[in-house]
Image 1 (cartoon, rainbow, N blue to C red):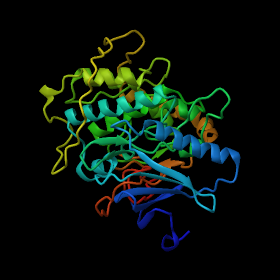
Image 2: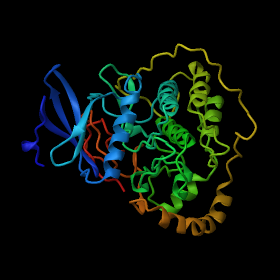
Image 3: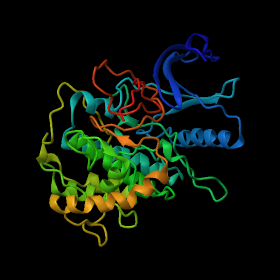
Length: 387
C-alpha cells in the first residue's frame, strides 16, 4: 500500500519514518487529542489463526506494560481491510540509544548504570506479567520528549501459556545481543532477557556488544556463537562492582546466570558510580542526558559473590587462538540449524546486526555512515542492513 493511499480513520498520516523487513512506521497525528504518534503497519497479512494469535500476543504484551515509565506506551491497535495489522505508539523524538551510540559514542559510567536500572525494572515488570521481550538492544531503547528512556518493540514477545505456541522464528533474533542458548534452539526464558540487557549495558559503556572485535572485523555466525561462550571481558575504568554484576548476567550457561531481572536491577542500583564521575570510553559531546526516575522501593540488593554466579578469568589470547578452530567446527552445524537470516555479521557502532522491525518514534539526524541498529518498533530511524 503506497503512502499517499494510506488512510486510517481518526488519524492524519504524515510521512514514513522507517521501514524494515516486517513493518513500516509512519508519523501520524491522532486527531481526537491532537498529538503526534508513531503508526506501525505490519507488512505481513493475518490470513491464519496463528498469525492473528501472534499479533494479538504482541498487542496484549505491550498493552499490559504501557503504564510503566520505561515502556513505550501503546495507544491503539487494529487490522486494515487487507488484513495487515497496525499499532499506534508514542512518538519518541529523542531517537534510540543505538542512534546515540552511533553519533556520540559510549555513555558515561553513571548514565549507563542508571539506564540499566530503569530498563531492568521494566523487564522485571514484563516478566511478572508473563512477557518475554526477546530483542533487548540499544536500538530498542528510545528517548522520549522528556529525556527519559523506554523499552520498545515487543514484536518478539512470547507470553508463556500451557496451551499456547511459545517460540518465535530465530530469523528475527538480533545476533549481537541474543543469549548463547538462543542459537541452540533453546526455549526462551527470563534469563535470556537478562543476558541481552547486560549486553546492552555493556555496549552503552564500550560502544559495541561483548566479544565484538574493536576494529569491526566481520564475523561468521559460527565465530559469533563461539565468542558468546567466552568469559565476560572486564571493562577497564569501570568500577569493579559494576564489572562483577555484568559478569554474573553474561554467563553463557543460563543455569549459572543471574536469571532474575529484578535482581539485576537491584545489583546495578547498588553499584557506587559517584566516584567514577564521567569516566568511561568516551565523552558524550553535546548529547542530551537521559533521565531515569528513582525507584521508590528499598528492596535490598543481592549479596555479591553468590556460589555459581562468578565467572572464570578470561583465557589468554594464545589459548583462544589454539581452541578456536575446533570450537568453530563443533558449532557450525548448530549455526546452520538455527536458521538466522544472516551468515556474516558485521558490527559497526553499537547496534544490532540484523534488521528486525522498523521503529516508530523519532527521526535520526542524517548520516553518511552505517546505522548501528535496525529501527525498533517505536523509533523512526530509517533502516539500512549492516551485515
